[in-house]
Length: 98
Image (cartoon, rainbow, N blue to C red; front, side):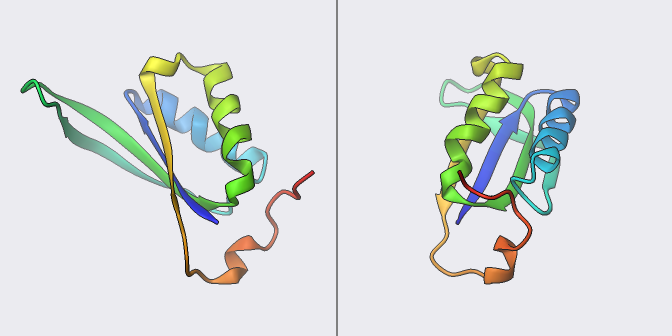
């Protein structure tokens, strides 16, 4: 299992990504942290939105492709954090791997 993190620039992007992930049952629930400030090394900053959810590691590539098919790669950052310990019930009712 992984914690999927998606950083987007617009609220519309994040709402659409949320809907896609839930539609295909990649996650049971999603949290969106609206209006985060991202600071860049060159001194600039921007407001971004961060989507987080728990999903199966095997879904990462599928989710990444689904998102990149809909949105320009430069506008979305996608990464995952592996989970060593978690409640196994988070795995119930998710899409079945093929």
